[in-house]
Image (cartoon, rainbow, N blue to C red; front, side):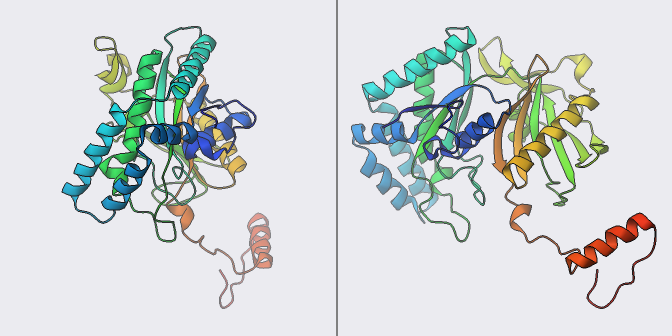
Length: 358
């Protein structure tokens, strides 16, 4: 069994033992996109833990009993399973593998207590047609091997949160869709600003646009909905900005020096009414999103961060699952007719429309 897989390992791209989220990041790393370094505590490690703790059958029974049960029953099942996962001993070989991988990551970073993000990555999460995004846990600014181990366990327990136990797949998907989990451990990006970028307009479905949403500080403000982001609409061909709305931002998610954890802190007064992105950075983000869409062959929903050095990092990539599942509107009735329209547009002449023609 393989307990650790590194994002930059040539064999990691698309490996299902990394779960949907981290398998995608391994693919992005292999394709040359800038992804923070890290490793996945694989689904093998999760299954080894359940087996050693004697919890595998309880896990299956918990999911079975939660299916179709009332909220009170689900919450009771969730609490019991969470207690079991959090109290059961971790197999020594799994713990040693995690400690060793974190030590190697910290050595790469030049900091023995390097801060990391610890993120759940379910087997069915972020796959085309799936909507598991937001069902699992992410912990930011985790420091030290002991804390990494504790948060890996919390992510495992998150497999049995009420929201996960009551999640129902879309029509056509298997009922039992997400029975194991990987936990990703990545270098923490102390983001100057962060957010999401869509390779289509998420409101209208317009595939000719790239839409960027961003805020000062960590992207948690955008993805959680706690902060109103600034929004920029960019033409996908010319990269011309065709729309924007800059939000006044008084608070942001960042490391709170007083508590040593992430939380809402004040945005410096001189930044509150400023755009978190320059025109050049907007164009760079649009170009990055377009390259990722071309690489993956479908519309994408991408989380990004701008580091203190001004460099863009890709934090998460997943297929866009709303508009991409709808049938494309037929604009023309035949390839020949499409050519007629293109030629006519450039020639500056009208096009005769017949019955059934667009």
